[in-house]
Image (cartoon, rainbow, N blue to C red; front, side, top):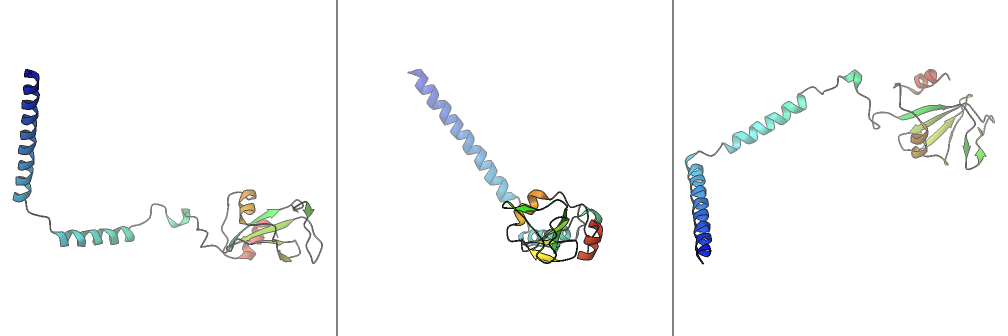
Length: 152
């Protein structure tokens, strides 16, 4: 029976201590001035503009262009190109190897033979190109520069 009284007394003591702590916290908040809300909004806006003006971590010559910055990607495909069990040929000259595969921004894939004939390949898509191409090793401002780099 005395245990019940002790438990109640301890619970009352803990409750009163919590009340005193909350009263002290409330008193502290009434005595300290509120921060300048408009000044903090202006400081936040100033911090945001400074962050926008701040230099990026990487210098420009280390940054790779994003997919939206380039017109497309290209790779060499020297062996015969087999799609759905058929070897693809150039419809104009009949070449069946030494392709340049171009993946354009709209996810269409084009084939270019050694003679410079270009045809759109409906059997291939950007997912196929991404599976078969390696990492990009260079960025070229024009198609002619990229073809020159590939040896065409």
